[in-house]
Length: 380
Length: 196
Ligand SMILES: Nc1ncnc2c1ncn2[C@@H]1O[C@H](COP(=O)(O)OP(=O)(O)OP(=O)(O)O)[C@@H](O)[C@H]1O
Ligand SMILES: [Mg+2]
Image 1 (cartoon, rainbow over the protein chains, first blue to last red):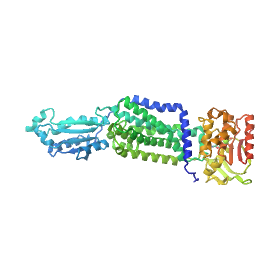
Image 2 (image 1 turned 30 degrees about the horizontal axis):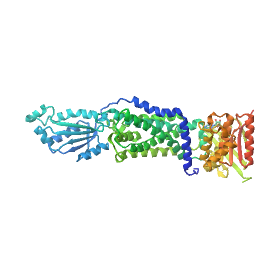
Image 3 (image 1 turned 45 degrees about the vertical axis):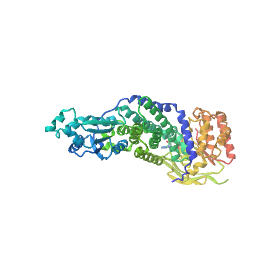
Image 4 (image 1 turned 135 degrees about the vertical axis):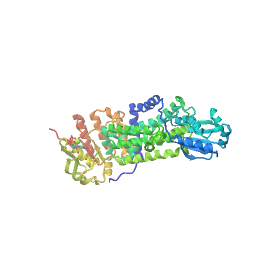
């Protein structure tokens, strides 16, 4: 309706300076932003277990004999493994694991059936992505019994003696990325996402409602500012706060919990920037909708709870029902968790993380657009 | 511009729910005039002023403010009007200088630093520029608010009960200021509650 002045960079800077100064003076909030990560890091020392099934797996079947097929069939029947991919080389399998497309690669080598019948104890190699031990633990635990049961029917009559030996197959399990099956390796990088989600949404959630409640909104609106200037100006200073939290968590992860850092820290910082921006944008949008600070807080928790429950932080993502996974895919936290674990534990590069990155960026863009549209330029 | 109308509105109406707070008000103020607007508490003075500067959407009415349409061109009007709110509405956790600097940036004031310095000196706030706005007494807050409204050199000042709760000496100083400014060609619309 009313003609807007053009977006002004110097006005944006003005708002950033103002917000930054106010943030600096608000010692209590600032201390909380540092205190929350430290508190949560100490609290989350233990893991939550569950028994996820239907985990995506890839099969590398080089054996042509019947026993190899029997075994594959038994794997499928256990309901722990869904063979979604067939690969021709070990490298292909490794790539799928690194990108998180599969949880396991089952490798049945050439001449498996022949060697089995000769009593040569052929190798069966199972490689698992163990970044989240809770997700793989049960499936791996079931492997031994599963195999022996499967081959009982094939190893009969004269071959029965093979069943008597401790195991006719030499099962090799490689837990990749987290060989000691350490749950803290999984939880601590995950905490980075959880803490950022909580604090970033909350801090900007209060941004506009605070101006309303203090009566300063009337003044702000009487000046020729554009919604986008106000909203972006209120987001930018808190990116710094987000980065301080990332630094605190990374330092604690490395020195206190000895989480390995295999990937590139600069890449992690770039991803974190987009993730922080997405959460700040969500908060500021809540702030434009909420009538007062209490409502803004309630909205924060309304999003925060499903985020941590459905993102794969609390429960292994692949153990959840499909509807829950679908909802989970919407939250930036879900994608960020995969990226952080990927970068820290697997050494993922930009290519590997890109397919988790765009949903976060899209989310940020949509949120900011909604916020700008919702921002009322009058006091009505 | 002298002799022209700075404010020329008619039929201005505002309803909150089913309560009509401002009903069919017409007002003409000539450029360079100091116009007083009196009314008892709750009569809709603040609501009327907010409609003039685009902070509230009028339910009915039309007209111009500084030659621009009050309904459709409020973004242009905002740039040329100074509005001093009834309740102190600057940032209490920013210092006097920081508040003025922020306002100057929002209006894209040229030579911002000098403008802030000048306004601090004019209003006798130079010695206190580092003080937080929240720590000021009522009289000083009012001086700050006036200084902030003037920093972008508006053509029209809308003052909503500017001297409420201020001691007689400060009040006299304030009116002296207003008269000096009016002599420089500014238009004033000043709202005040009726007493007694
Ligand atoms: N945003 C709003 N929503 C609902 N009612 C409102 C709103 N703003 C003002 N009112 C009502 O409109 C009436 C007029 O309010 P307004 O503030 O314009 O009066 P006023 O003349 O400025 O009074 P005062 O002298 O006390 O400042 C009041 O009864 C008030 O309760
Ligand atoms: Mg009033």
